Length: 383
Image (cartoon, rainbow, N blue to C red; front, side, top):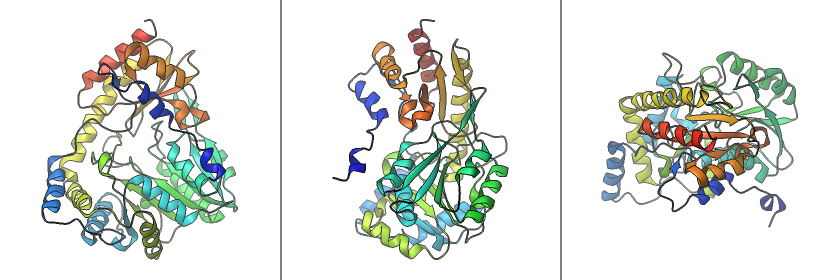
């Protein structure tokens, strides 16, 4: 086995979750998914596809009608995107891995904005790249980007920069001005931007339908790859469906990579995705409003606990907080499961930069679960 594989850390979120398996009394907020089921119209589209016998291979890049629908969806939110620039993948994580395989090789230098979902930095490491981590900084409990530090890390030797915004786990979101500065710099250095914009619809700024996207400001031929997923804003985590937006001319090479990874996404799953895109205006805004209610229910209660540092995230579906004196996040998360039945994700799962922090997924159908969870945390702290 390659040494880099042996050295990959196991999921510390799973480690905490495993400690609570089989316990019906645990309130689980450790995984990054809503507890709402997929909308019925989406499920019905998949069932109809199966009944129609659509159980065969499809085009590597996805059903043409799904790619056209995604092009229209992005055009409505951002700018016009040609369907031939879109590749449908078997999950958002597969989209990111294929982007890494397309752009990154052994010895390449990759800069990543962290803390971040661990898969994003593990993928180029698996391919033999050298990862340079640039950490967000904490100011008044909120995570912010020091742009000069990031720009100094990106040189002509930097093959790619990985940016996840809105960010998992911190909720940090790039501003339009920050995107403009970063794009201009990467044009000068010849560096690819791999933008994970999976959470773009889960954005709470007044009047905004989506978080700022690099697609709004980039030219088609810029060195930009944008990854998306159906998991979060379409409530389809278990379906495993995503997509990439590519510069013109790269689709045929991405089709080869998809062939060598998964061949294609299942047709019935793509039919479900097509229904989700067509129904997006009917249910995504309501979902975002429910998530905002969850955020606004929980964050003030967390902030009111003595010793807790937390800020209100602009996007995503996570509260990222720390408790004074609790510097070992994995041990603390396990203790919360053991003592009060509260399941959270340890900050160390997202990198050393996040040690001492905890991630709480607030995507819940019932905000009362969040209130109860804060009560359990309070009891664990002896308050």
